[in-house]
Amino acid sequence: MYIHAVSHYLPTQVVGNEHFTQLNGLSSDWIIERTGIVERRKAAPGENTNTMTLDVIRLLEPKADLSTVDLIVGATYTPYDTIVSLAHEAQHSLGIADIPVVSISTACSSLLNAIEVVEGYFALNKATRALVIVSEHNTAYNNDQDKISGHLWGDGAAALLITKERQSEGDFAIKALLTGGAAHTSKATTAVMMKPMEGGVTMPHGRDVFINACQYMPKASLQVLERCGLTLADVDYILPHQANLRISRNVMHTLDLPEEKLISNIQYLGNTGCAGCAIALSEQWDMFEKGQRIVVTVFGGGYSYGAMLIEV
Amino acid sequence: MYIHAVSHYLPTQVVGNEHFTQLNGLSSDWIIERTGIVERRKAAPGENTNTMTLDVIRLLEPKADLSTVDLIVGATYTPYDTIVSLAHEAQHSLGIADIPVVSISTACSSLLNAIEVVEGYFALNKATRALVIVSEHNTAYNNDQDKISGHLWGDGAAALLITKERQSEGDFAIKALLTGGAAHTSKATTAVMMKPMEGGVTMPHGRDVFINACQYMPKASLQVLERCGLTLADVDYILPHQANLRISRNVMHTLDLPEEKLISNIQYLGNTGCAGCAIALSEQWDMFEKGQRIVVTVFGGGYSYGAMLIEV
Image (cartoon, rainbow over all chains, first blue to last red; front, top):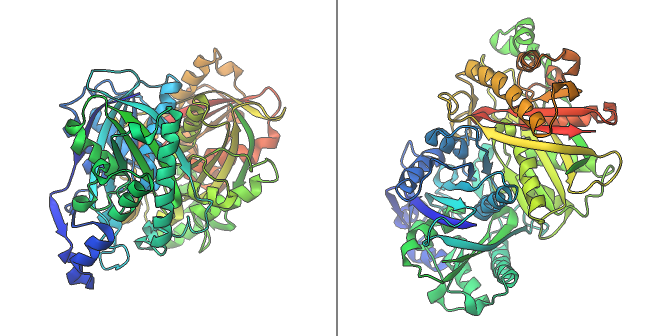
């Protein structure tokens, strides 16, 4: 399968670290040292995961024919509407009748869960052109005052047109993809949570998330390379889940790869949940050169993880 | 693929129609005439979609070996936790490492979306034994005072072990499954909504939901039969999404089938969302006879729909 085109949308409001300094006394230097985050985007009143879905579709339309999409898979853990999901909103906007529409909610790993669902539909011959949309409105569920995790989150969305067959020379090939879950570990279900009816996001065990993210993303990256008969020497870029710059650097250190091979947008976007890697892919799309290989690897709350090897 | 075993869990508290009569003046006769609902279950304080997940796993364990599950797909539109999804909770409870874990949130059609996702993993040879869990805590997001939809909702959950190959003579075969979406229609994104940050469920256009449900469930049922070279004469039972008894009867009327062939639990459970059909399948499991065929058909908010043919 192939990524034919990608788009992303970012809300215009920029929230700098000084916002949190004023609220709860965390200094910008402390936030940068601990997370790498300098600023993040915040959705405007009236914006949400469904409106950002419409934005990324509008931005994808000039790059790809969306009229023949035959599967829509959406993903978010910060839903505006859990009944009219963002995948439904996308179908409504495109006006395409009778195609399968699925929404995923597997926290920060959802981009790869969504693409694996697409892979399944392709294998079943139930679809050939899938629109994948990842959209997060973290600030809707966030408590800015929270000194532990209030400063981490940002909003944003991305859309990918994924096709079973190559559509053009510029397509990126998905050579392999795997997902897994580490929810069997002791703190997986209590480390980071987002309970809509109980005040939103909390992160009582950030250190456990950190440790497991640093362990599972390198492991999954090596596994996906192994499935393709490749090694780290064949990889040009690592694009890890954008949760914390220290985690990303730790992943590179574990893989013994230089930081020049790290793709990161958390510095100016914060943790944009399952949208982060897709936004980065869209931001960097024109920078990649033919033949380059990118490993996208994710790890999130609930401790599901995954890795995908892309060849430009 | 095959359904090897099913379990269901219902909270103990029964809420009769008189609860709503006291709150907002709707008479029990009026509720029964309009919806068929006499009573519904309500989760106790401390119960939620994740605790009900643990309950259905506990109830499934005596019926099936869950230690070799290699895929978990959860579904809900009434999440307790959008990060630690009920699929993560299930993996944590079972203690199985490294398997794919996916949560679906495609409103009332999610049972069939979830099973179609399983079908994809089976086609990819990425799984052979899938645990599907559907769990709804509607009363957490419901406004009991709401005269339009406050009286419709109930809580409950079900679990299914679905295997690629037949495990035993008693397995039910899934002969065909399809899903689709009708979100292209004008009111699909505004008819029934559940916005966690804006007060929960609302149903401004119940009549439009009714009309489309009555149209799409018969259509999908006929399509799934056609794919198997069968007709309605080959069907023993229709199990429609449990949204409203009038919709279910309308579906039977459209298909020109007698009401004896209708499976329904809405009278005593209310609308239990994506769990309704799976609960009914579990309730009736021992009643089915070898060779019988059941069409499960769903339609929900956001207007996604589907149908599945089961052969006992």
